[in-house]
Structure formats: structure tokens, C-alpha cells
Amino acid sequence: MNKSSLLLGLLLLLLSCKGGGTAENLSDVGDTIRLQYARNITMVRYGNRIKVELANPWGKGLLGSYLLVPRTEGVGMGNPSSGMQQVTIPLENALVFTAVHCGLICELGMEDCIGGVCERQYIHCLTKDVVDCGNGMSPNQERIIQLNPDAMLVSPFESNTGHDKLGQLGIPVIECAEYMEPTALGRAEWMKFYGLLVGKEKEANAMFDALVARYDSLKALTVHVTKRPRIISETLYGNVWYQPGVNSPIGQVYADAGAMTAFPKYVQTGSVPLSAEQVYAEAYDAEVWLVRYDGKNPKTLTQLGAEADIYSRFEAFRQHNVWGCNVSASHFYERSPFHPDRLLSDVIQICHPEISLPRPMYYYEVLK
Image (cartoon, rainbow, N blue to C red; front, side):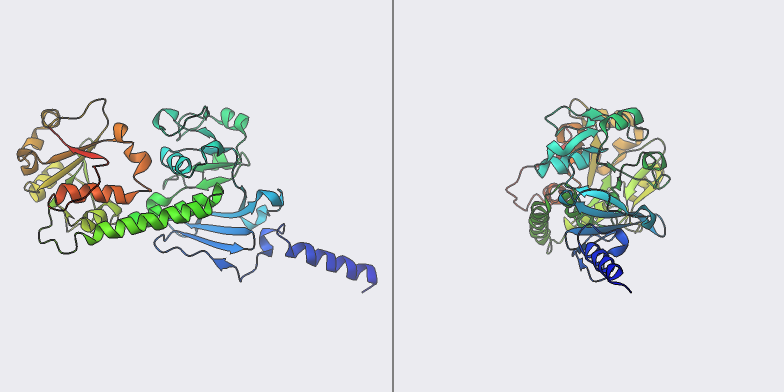
């Protein structure tokens, strides 16, 4: 090897060791970022860069693979052949598809990095004008192109995990699949990933640690309760009445609140579709009924009873122990996923009024 070739080799070696290397140059000895509850995400730190892999909750393989590169290192260091999308952080002009992720980003003090959203009418946390890219299921691609976001935070679903059309725009697509985590705290722990994206890693970590402390302190209040009320959830959707499985995040919140779903034989990690007749046969005498609804005014028992004849036959209805959450007024969907402690607090107060809590109800109030 001549002198010039040796110098060239040394130069290439030095460049590959700097933060601007390609995805393939990541070492196998990175530092794994510890996640205590989340099961579908792994994050490994390699110097200033972070490799993030999202497991496909509906099948084998990965839902997404990302290389987070600090903005100070420039652009163009990723290698598309690796299947890993490069995301320059912190985000400065993100397109955020859902209210829940907008809510978290705003709570982290990074509203300014949101350049566009989908379905603006459902997002309440924003105080500035942003581009409305239309329906989240079929967004307006012309507006997306005009916005030219540095990343798109989307909510995937089983039949469309690839977002093929969005991927063709050449913009990183962040698959925000935290809602598929099997536990409420596992879902909330994804805030560590989103904190990295918007440059608020320390703040997100501190927020999560405080959340876990509050959740555990509330859970401890119900350890020795002797009576665990049975809960019916929601109302009919067409001809189907969905109930949370015992091992679903909601089912686990009920258990942590010293209660239980009224359907203990269904141990699924998601919701269970039942008929009205099945719900009545198995849970007509359940003590508590929790209902979510969307309305300008609080729902009443009379209104609920008028929706289906079978409702008034439930014992919780007869005993006026039906509690409603107006999702619009309380911003339930925007706030609760990353604050399961608040939902836990509500369920404890509903099911165990003998436990004194200094907090007001966050979401629910009794139907009058």
C-alpha cells in the first residue's frame, strides 16, 4: 500500500468514527436506554445518535426503524438501504396527526415545533395557527408538500402500518403505536421517545418518573380494600358493546383502583365485542357503570335510558351510579393516555368514596 492510499484509509476511518457516519457504522456496543414498562420500543444510544426500533404489535418484524441525528450534525448521513429512516432532532416543523401527541408536545413546552396537524377541530392545546392537513385517514398531500415538515407523527393501525403514500413523500414517518402497549404505564413511557424527538429528553424522563410515583401511591391506597366493585364500560356501538379485557390497560387500571371489570372471564389484552344480551346476562347487577360521550351539555340518566331500552334495567342505572365522561369538555383523549394516574384517581374515587383523595375528579361526574 502506498503512502497516499494509507492516508486515504486513515481519513475514511476517522470520518466513520464521527457522528456523521451512516447507519451501518453504528457499533454493537451502544448504551440501551432503559424502559421499565414499554414493550414495543427499544432505544440505543451511540454517542450523539440514537437508534430506535418499534416492534410490529400486529405481527412479526419491525413497524419502524429510525436513526435520530442531532441537528448540529447536519443532514444526509443516513443510508436508505439500511431500512432505517433518519430523523433530524429536535424537530422544528413537525406534522402531528393526533390530539394526544399534540397534547404531550405542548405539555413539554414545544408547541412551536408543531407546524401542522390533522383534524384541527379536535385539538385544544394549540395557541398558534398551524396548517390543517385534513383527515388523518386521508390527509391532504398538497398541504403536506407545502408544509414540508421534518417528520410526520402518525397513528398506525393494523391494516395500514406502512403508510405507503406518506412514505413516498420522502419525509420521515414516525409510527406512534404506543396505544398498542399492553399496560397504561407502558403506553405512557413512550413519552421518553417523543421527548427525544422534540429536544426535551430530561423533561420527559422527569415527567414520567413523577407519573409513576403518583400512580404507585394511588395504587397503594387500594391494596387492602375488601370489596372490589364490578364495572360496566361504555355503551352499545351499533349492535356491539365493547368491554375491556382483564389484561387490557383499562382493565388493569380498574384492578389497580381496587375494582374489576364485570367480565372476569375475558382475559384479553384489548376490548371484547359483546352483544347487549351478553352484557346484561353477565353484568346486570354490576355496581358501577362508566360511560364516555361527546356533547355540549352533560348527559343525564334520562337521556341515557332513552338510547336503548335495556339500559334502564341495569342495577347501576337503577341505583344512579352511572358516571359519565364528556370527552370534549374534559379533553379525555388528548390528556389521559400520558396521564393514566388521573384516570386511576377518578376510578378510585368512584369505586371507593371512603378513600379520601385531595384531588378533584379529572374526567368523570355522576349522571343526574
